[in-house]
Length: 238
Image 1 (cartoon, rainbow, N blue to C red):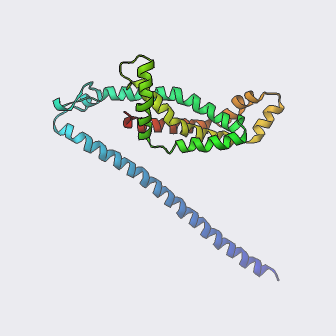
Image 2: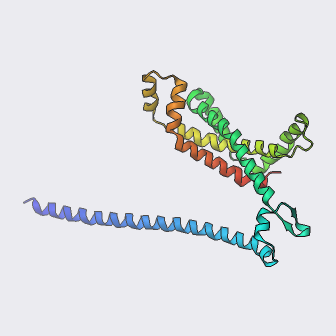
Image 3: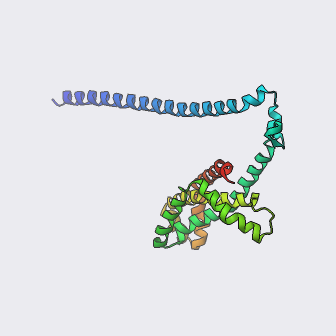
């Protein structure tokens, strides 16, 4: 006597499951379409900028090889070589990473593992606020503070040097590295720490041999984001 209601119930569940699967399939296809549109839009923007920027040079017979590897930038004499700019950007990025990554990583470790909660609650929001400061203000800080310091105390004839750019970029990328790395370190399960301490490891050893390796993917993401900020804002400084 109870079999017909069960059959109806099973039929109803089958229809609802079918609708759910169709909805999930449509949602996945919609998300895929949005992702493809985003990539296509980015490629179109890059292609448009590259075409509009290189067309005048190519139309006037200027070689793209000379533009890329030329060492003279004299627009009045039709000399457009950007190779020194490329090399300077490369050195500035590497130098800022050498300075910014260790400081940012150690700061994130201190805030997430060592600092008292009261101190972390004050410093962490302050670091996050630094990430919202426009790069122009970092450039003004560099011109007003760092450039005179390098010129006066290091004996440089001109303070607007590659070293000044490296220091400003390192300061600029610190908030991004600290914030993302701190979040990644805090996301490591407490059982990792408890197991390491239970085996007799010290607190510092647990941090650097257990916690940091467990959060390495998030730390690498922090470094990549900091690198992107340094490369993207390099041309706006000085």
